[in-house]
Amino acid sequence: MPRVTITVDGVRHEEDVEPRLLLVHLLRERLGKTGTPVGCDTSNCGACTVLLDGRSVKSCSVLALQADGGDVVTIEGVGANGSMHPMQRAFHEEHALQCGYCTPGMVIAAIDLVRTDPDPSEEAIREGLEGNLCRCTGYCNIVRAVRRGAQDMGQAVSTP
Image (cartoon, rainbow, N blue to C red):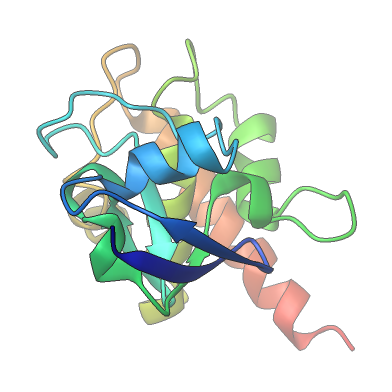
């Protein structure tokens, strides 16, 4: 059985994996990262989005073997020292969730969006989150949360 070495939320893991094991199942079943939900298993919903080497990916469409040597950040790993990440806080404060199932993937995708576009317009946010579906909201609060999160992330970066 192939062995992968993967860093998840700052912790290095070595795991024997079946060649067909999806990253989402490695994260949830082996490493206990249950904040990454299995939404659709077809890469349509984006609920399972994580950062792999700094870029957002749908972990249900990535084999664990493809992440070998990689650095994965899940929703559990985006905050620091027990505090919420500015994007998580913005989603909370702007009431950008209802059932919460899509929220981990939305937050991760939003963090990646802001990495490449620190001041995204409403149109850029809607386009950037296109691969993440929410079945409960009308997206207005999500867009507002991403704008606020982007502003807060900019302030967090510039603050010594």
